[in-house]
Image (cartoon, rainbow, N blue to C red):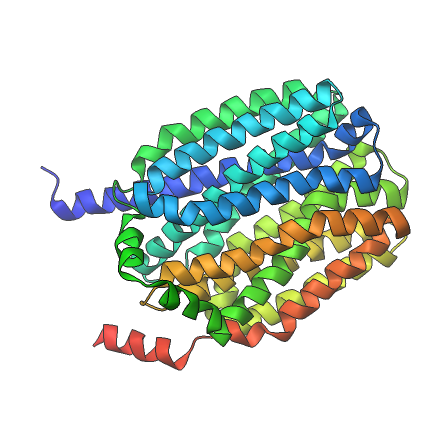
Amino acid sequence: MPTESSQLKRGERGWRLATFVIFVGTGITYASWVTRTPAIRSSLGVGTGDMGLIILGLSIGSMAGLLLAGPVVARVGARHVITAAATVASLGLLTVGLGSGFAIAALVGLGLAFTGAGFGMCEVALNVEGAAIEKRMGRSFLPSLHGAFSLGTLAGAGLGAIAELLDVPVPVHLGVLAVVVLVASGSVVALLPPASGREVTRTRRRTSASRNATVWRETRIVLLGLIALGMAFAEGSANDWLPLGIVDGYGVTSSTGAVFYVVFVAAMTSGRLLGGRVVDRYGRAVTVRWSAVLAVAGILTVILAGDLVLAALGCALWGVGVALGFPLALSAAAESNADAARRVSAVSTLGYMAFLVGPPLLGLLGEQFGLLQAFYVVLAGAVLAGLVAGAAGQTRETEESALAHVK
């Protein structure tokens, strides 16, 4: 008969598997929409500025889901929140497809709002789950978990590029994919611990509003939030605008723009899956700092290259550069034993501000100056993350806590 220890290990493996599969599904959903943005823009007959306002629906939905997820996870647990989030995101993707098919911009924006709400809810629930798994394992896990999201975006970007080449209608592409992702996520959510997330409920009920506010007065949390903000801006801008930027800036087809996005996602995925060794050797702070340097070099290359081969290299550097910043900021926030969930949520919230402000800002700047020139603002975000990278280092409090745990 299986021992209690072996059952526990199987449960932890299932826990990790569930978070990986759901993160992959989220990435596929997101990238599938991104790779079809040129086709959707053409079907709607709108300009870059109007497209930025439409994409704002995704940002607003994401922020709403992010802010709503904390108290809901606290009440009902992560299982129910993730199930609801997958359903909402899939329905949103179906609505985006219908809006594109009927050429109704408002319907596309509404669908993106629902999709973003699903993303936001999943972001909080899965990162809190990932932080808990990381503590249980005693080693880095969040970067590889975000690597699962990147694997999903790579798969979604590849499928999107194929759909562009084969002229698959957007409603068919997004509709079929929404059903597949919903079924896959629903099949593994039961592997999550039944009470996962509910421990946060008891903590929050014992915590006064004034104590909740203290997390925002911690200098280190604010700086980690700025790392998340800068890197999320650099990552999200590529996700939202890189295909269109390549199409408009280099005069290539939509399918070629999708291929360049695949290069970016492949580089980012590799950085997340292989970056753990770099972090273990050099530490979080050094890794974030050099990641920012690579991101800046990549963005500058994309803007200034004027050559498709060099631009592809720039996309690769951009992808590697933004691979680790956001997950390492969350990992640093979660390293304290006290109120780790609140710190993760706070850093995530600051990071997600990039998704709220970025799309309309770049859309407006792109309308006036061209998308490639608008990417200079993205570069500034990467510079900001590099300047405050020291906050990601291990604190004296954490070192003492770790030594006490060993003793």
